[in-house]
Length: 489
Ligand code: UDP
Image 1 (tube, rainbow, N blue to C red):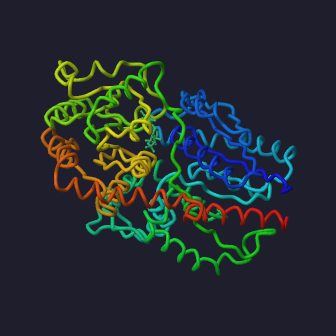
Image 2: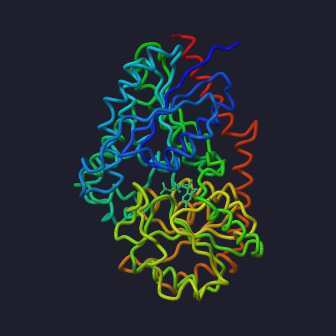
Image 3: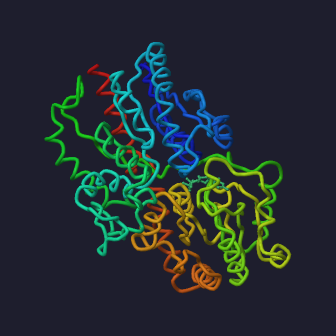
């Protein structure tokens, strides 16, 4: 019988990243029955509630450990949640090292470490224990290509990226305007940019990248990454430490990794109510509107969206969150305020037959897989994007923060499975524009083309995950790399 191979995985305190790495580990263990994974989670204040739910249904081959929490109030308060998360992860590294030491001394054949890109300090710790060290990359290959390219871009460009008149050419990707780069890139004198640049430089420590995407979605990007890799191979030769031979840092596309269980259902009957409401709608007639696990709109934008949906006359199911002037205000936990009280007066009564409003959280994959859903107005978080592709739902892109604007460009200009509404000079999408785009997606000519293309992409996603599909093969190759390493150890 094959000996059990142990792998440690470390994520960050954010639901979508934790959920993604957990699902990836499940996929890995499904293919390699003799693997065992310990997931390690740095924590802010307390474990993420939605993640705790996911952890209830883990197979016995996955363990988990929460590191001692960092207090949110001890983190700088004048920075974004994304920066707070990164600082909390850095502060957790001493306890992560302690956990790894104890795991290393008690676990035979601890062979590899898999780290979230925003926890990549962990790679250095992995090397201390002579482990193969990988990045599990929850976003797109396009984002990985940007991150790997950043040190060079930083050297070549002296102004703010948003002031460049020409689009930026990320290797293997469609050209992108500076203002569509991730939010951390928008002010080069900021702490956020400094942190991301340091992180990107640390990527060179990785023995490989496991990316939550699939070949047919991002083929050009992957080819460019592989070519770069071949170019780097000579440079890296002999520099990889004991037993690491002459390997390069391959990019394995292992997605789409999406949530499979009904684990993110809202409490009690809300989920049931949601699905029951969908049961009574015509196939493909409902637009699902959601901004991910923590996206928020300003009060003004929330009003415009409400009036825009009403004006479109289209059926909708909207997950409403209390407004905030910061787009990712709810990222470190949804507040307790009732979001419905911020809707325009009389909205719920007026749209009673037209729409359903769900406060704060809904069972997204269950909703997207329902036959009544015909479109998804999304903030373009990568998990939401992949869920929509896997379930064949055309999109309206409404990026808010992180790398979501890049994802929106990929969806609209790249694979053309989404419409992108226009934001005015104050960064607001007006109600008339919303109504036009919603009708365009759900009923218009343009919508027809998008429906066709998303079906093709849905098939390709399903093919990638088949036994002989590109993502399954990539996962096997990753397994081979681990086993070869163990054999040499
Ligand atoms: N999600 C959910 N219900 C909600 C909001 C989000 O189940 O009401 C899930 C969604 O299905 C996805 C994840 O939370 O898996 C959000 O991840 P994404 O990358 O789209 O965005 P983020 O939360 O990182 O901004």
